[in-house]
Image 1 (cartoon, rainbow, N blue to C red):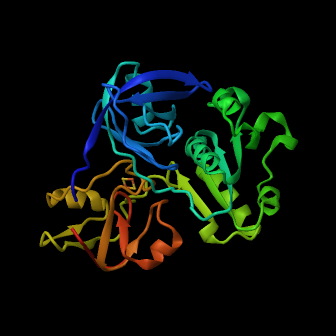
Image 2 (image 1 turned 135 degrees about the vertical axis):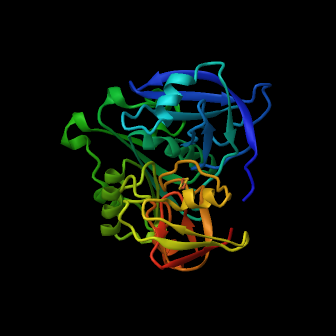
Image 3 (image 1 turned 60 degrees about the horizontal axis):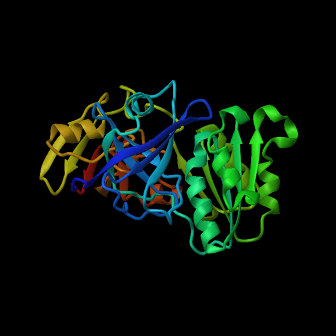
Length: 325
Ligand code: FES
């Protein structure tokens, strides 16, 4: 695997919105245009202290003078959001990856229902800009605990697609709550759903979508955290043999060890970002054996294909796993 080329940027603007969301504007230090990106893309921030974390781009993909993203300060953070809030100020220089997109819009979809829960609104904003520019019909539902905790409200109100947005605040009472089943049933035939937010919220919306008759090809999702956290190893998992085919190396992966650590022990570095099975950065090709998938990234179809594995969190169901490394 090649090391990704990184981009030097500076924090041009930083503001706190919705009480706990740092909204950052990142730009080239010399003002040059940044690489293009498509709606749903994220970049990895290489943070002071060495952490690397992925965050969705929320700005208009047609705008290349800067990237914008929103980072919720998460009390359960493993360090990423805390580092962003504490270390990144206006003028801070940092490096980021080029944008990558694991959550793209389906080009042929005639109608899109975008649903963002909390900070899950970020990729939906970029999608709204793209769909608006393409003249494709859509509706955007933004669910948050309360108006005061919701970021991006001014930006949404000023956007040319503001009339397509429905706001749902938990503290506004039942009529304001999102009725996902009704929304999806009322949307025109051929609709596609895009959902991002807390895992319980997403599971609920996707369950409603299935009830409303959407098939899996019409449902697109991006998790911020794996539904079952900390799953790389419970310490009670069986050991298995790992073969890195191209490198000609074999190692036993111990019950309490992750695949990623075992690979490091062999001197094989795999790029990682979220390290919890949600971003797809660490995907490796499986040549033999059966993965035990513990990520929240691969679709059911991709799991069934049995040809890739996210090594930051998944393990092997078979006694031997051969990877194309
Ligand atoms: S590093 Fe994000 S899925 Fe493994």
